[in-house]
Structure formats: structure tokens, C-alpha cells
Length: 115
Image 1 (tube, rainbow, N blue to C red):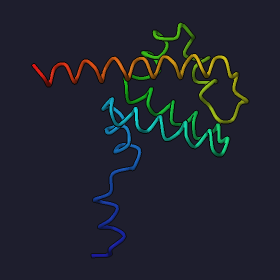
Image 2: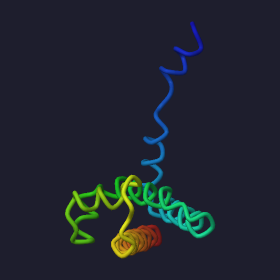
Image 3: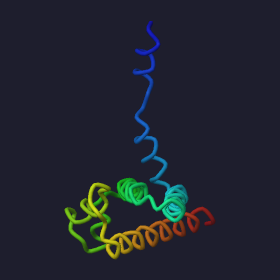
Image 4: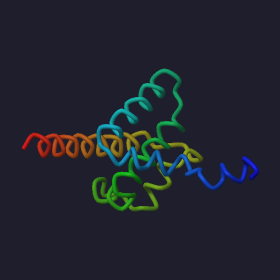
């Protein structure tokens, strides 16, 4: 059997693994912190926006983020797209909501594990 065919049969897309890991609040928090550090060091807004989008997708999707931010799905998708120049105030609002959500979910999980 050709090795390429074997690899195709066994390979799960990286994004599937990433989203599974990002569904865990502690992992998502570390991922977001790494993206923020990269943004602070390199000024790479694209990585920050893609990281925020991946976390939102893994943590319940854009619909849940819509509820947290009171922004429309179209606005959120636009703001988290690296192809468009971001509106910093909106990006910071989304970031704040993501961080609050991850903190709340992490605290809830820790509380459940101690009882």
C-alpha cells in the first residue's frame, strides 16, 4: 500500500484537533495568551484575530459570541477576519468577552472538580 494513501486514511485535519483542545477553557486561555504575547512582540494582528475566531468557534460558535458582545454575526465575522483592517475598540470588546467567558468556564470546571 502506498504510504500517501495510508496517511490520507489516518490523518485528521489539524483544525479538528485544535478546536477539540480549544473547547477546554484552560487550553483556550493559554492559546489566547500566546496570541496576545505574539501580538505584543510582533504586532501580528492576523494571528490574534484568527486565534480569537478559533476560540469563539470552539467555545460555542459565533452565535454565543454574538450574545456576549451584542454585535451581529456579520459584524463579528467581519471584525475577526484578517482581510479587513480591525476596529480596535470592537476587537478589544470581543477579546474582553472571550477572556471573561474563559475565566468563568474555568472557574466553573474547577469548582466542579473539587466537589
